[in-house]
Image (cartoon, rainbow, N blue to C red; front, side, top):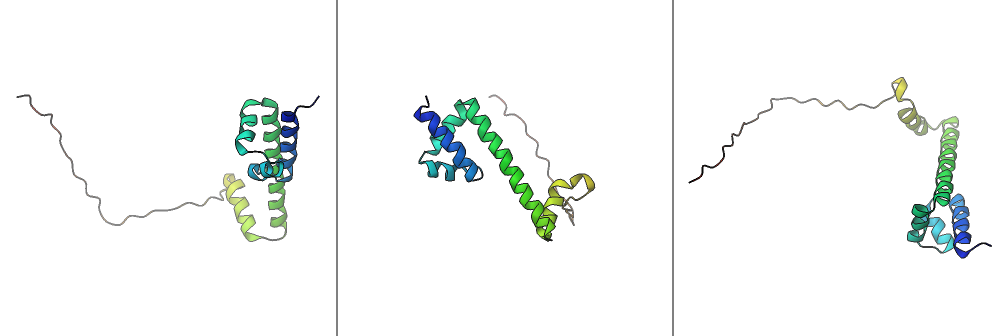
Length: 116
């Protein structure tokens, strides 16, 4: 027999799937507080595993959307992909900082106070 808690957990999982893993949206959809969601997430290993698996599915979906934009010739998407996935091939943005002028430093000596 399904308890109210188990029904709510299942509804949360379904709502998370529909909202692409956005917790606030899923909680609003099933009329549940975010604190309740996180209580389930932190205390129920099975629930946590399902939520984590949905996060991976969401990442896969978003990555597939990025690939579609790249196929359509979206330059920004291509640059983003190369900056994040192409680091091993040298696609890295580096900042070069050049300083002109000297650096002045002062040495301050400290001596402990003498007992009177």
